[in-house]
Each structure stands twice: as structure tokens, then as C-alpha cells.
Length: 322
Image 1 (cartoon, rainbow, N blue to C red):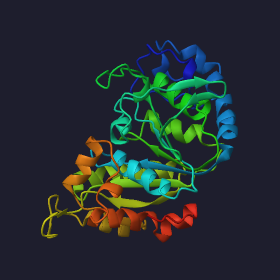
Image 2 (cartoon, rainbow, N blue to C red):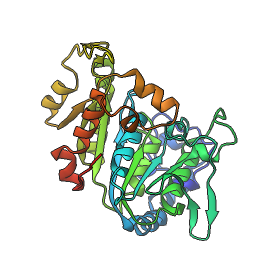
Image 3 (cartoon, one colour):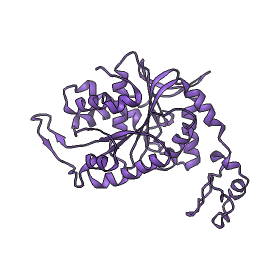
Image 4 (cartoon, rainbow, N blue to C red):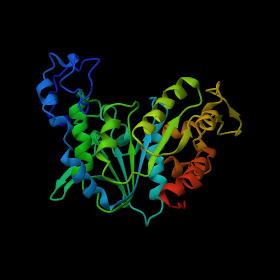
């Protein structure tokens, strides 16, 4: 299994993969310290943690992953505001899980920097923003926000496993999972560990320019390959709305048609286009909900329209009132 592999292993570029029939037998495996382990078939055995996680999360009604192939497009910002919007209904229990192991920004965005995780008889206790909004991040386990997490894949995967299996989530209506950019360790782990439980799907975040869309298409292919449903796409930073005059300027021109054209080409729902608003960045830096701080912003209305859109409702069957 993954956590049995040597962390000092330098994986060959043509490694057949631990689940492959050629694992440990291919010529590219020669010299790898994990060759005997892979050849024994132990890496193909089902991880018992998958069933444990399925049992642990059986009390979570809806699970939403927030993904993007590109960094810096606003995944964490969207994840945080999605969680805030869901939790605005006081009858709903919401949790936000940050699996960006090397770049955890959720503690800062949620106003929880400096908070710590406590151990109880039923596992790790998440940190609460409000009575009905819980948060978990590796940022709570670091002695300083400036500490670097320098881990290889197996150790990162082990931490994600602990978050899913050992945190005392309790009964939840929604679990929102904020992921790092890319299509590698963390993404494979979260999909694998959630395979024994129902996942509503992924919301994919992009910005209008082609340099972002190119990587987002890779993320879409990833979802298709691992059979992860795609709830829809959100285009972030979609024009700049002046807070004074409300005029819109295109800061990142959609040279190839932006998310709208990509969704039309790939037959995916476009959930909405969130404009740039400098107050979003300020509220994230200050750890406050932009939706509550600036309710009259065009961006706030689009966030709420996304949350109440028929595509999201179709997957999660909720309504939000703010």
C-alpha cells in the first residue's frame, strides 16, 4: 500500500505504477528500493482505511471537491465563500477541509490563523468559525504560518487519510474540500479515499485567459478518468467591476472565449462568472466573509447565484438564504 512505500524512493520516470500488473516486474523497476514490495502484490491490496473513511463519512450528506489544474485562480477563495454561503443557513452543518498540504491558506482566509487542533476521545476536533461551520487544515498543526511543509507523496497522502478518518466531523450537511492545483498526489488520494462513499462531484475553478484554461482542461480530463462527476465550472476574475462607478473592465481578456466557450466545447455547465473586486482580497487577508462584509457587491450576488443555481441544486439539493 502507498504508506508502505519508502519515502526515500526516487520514482523512475517510466515507473509502471504501484497498481499495475507490471509493478516490480518491469525493467524500469530495477534498482528501486520498493521493487520487492511492488512485486509481492502488497501494493495492490485495498487500503483498509478506505472502508474506515466510508464509515466515518457516512454521516456527511454532501461532499463537494473544489479543483483546478492551475494555481492562483481562486480555489481557496471560492471554497471559503461557498462554505460561508452554505453555513448562512443556521439549520445546516458545514465543514471546510483544506487538503493543500504545502500551501494551506484556508486558516488565514477563514480568520483562524494561530488556532490549534485538539485531540478528543472521538478524534481530532476541527476548529469552528461559527457554531455550524467547522474547518480543518494542516495550517493548524504548524508552529508558524511561515513553516514549510517539505514532504514526499506518501506522507502527504497519509495526512489526507488522517483528515478524513480521524477528524471528528460529526453529522454534516456539507463537506467542502479545497484542493491544491494539479492532478497528482493529493487529488488521487482524496478520490481514492472517498471511493467508498458518495461524492456529489467537483466544482472546477478557472480564470478567463487561455494559459489557465489549458491546465483546467487537464483537470477536467482527470475527473473523467477517475469517474469524478463535474458539477460545473466557475470563471473567477471575470472582469473588474469598479466599486465606485460599477463599470466593468477586462483585466484578463478571454482570448479563446474563456470558460464559456470551453464549457460549450466540453458540454459542461458554466455555474457563473465572478468579477474581480479588490474587497474580496481584502476580506480574505483579514479573515472575514466577503459575502457578509460587502453584500451589495456584484461579485456577492454572483456567488449567491452560483450557490442557488439549478446545477448545484441538482447535485446537492439545497437552498441558501442570506
